[in-house]
Picture 1 (cartoon, rainbow, N blue to C red):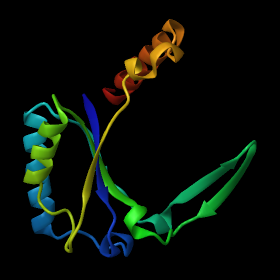
Picture 2: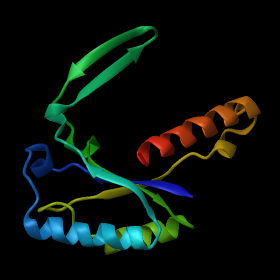
Picture 3: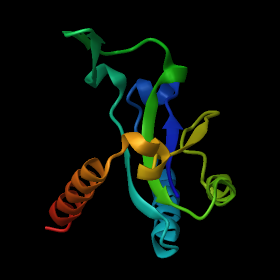
Length: 143
């Protein structure tokens, strides 16, 4: 199963404070472990919400909202995309992760939808389209 592992934002990440060399080293070593174990598919840190935007959808109308966004507990500071055998395996890996922030922090794990999760709504044509997009994405990633 694929899971998204979400590093929640904190006051320091929203303030744009950069990680220490020690934390960068620890996280780099952890990422290398994930890669060698065949788990890590992708992962990156994110800029503070002050450099971001939200687009609000209301029917056909779209409204662009500039950051920063006030609710730090709802923001994301980084993510990984992992391929694991179970949610328990993902939890065990997260428990081994260095604290990604200089203060108390949280990491959330969410399962990624698979085509079969959508039932009959995911027609064979839509499945084929999804497979084409994934193949092209993989091809571009490898160039």
